[in-house]
Length: 193
Image 1 (cartoon, rainbow, N blue to C red):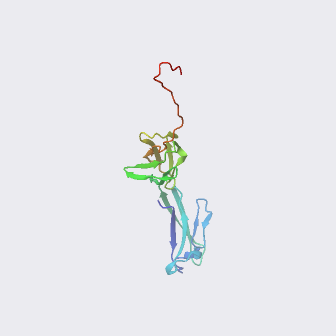
Image 2 (image 1 turned 90 degrees about the horizontal axis):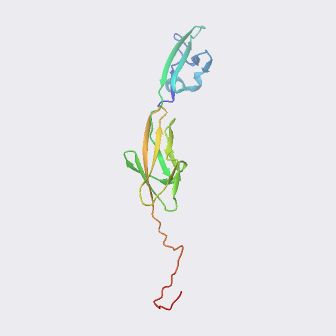
């Protein structure tokens, strides 16, 4: 998705005008870029780089004749489409790297002490202009099954892609007892305990 355009003007020519005197103006004839001579490139050409906004960009070039005030105007209309990329990279859950299982499915194993995640615990990198949301907003993690979250990425152009994140919470390795109770049992019929 192109974000700028470079205009190149050719060297001075007494017949056709002066390249360095070419300027770019906006729709109100206000000079946006001038003095292309400051941007000398190879073979004596002059250039200027102009950023492009999403949508229609109208660029007007005004060329000046070498020895007179005669000008010639050229108008370029460039349409920059919105970015359609709805991919995701650097996906992590609670700081743990996920494994790409293919088919827009990822998996991650979290330690037992993490018993829930929130949408903000899922981090990622998106293409320019894209947005994302994680569902559910909060997910309690079970140790007895698969825990599933989804990441929906919407491109700048509006196309959405859904990514599935399968989360496994490891089972506890804690064998400590939290409570011990004893019941005394006697076979003596006279015991009244």
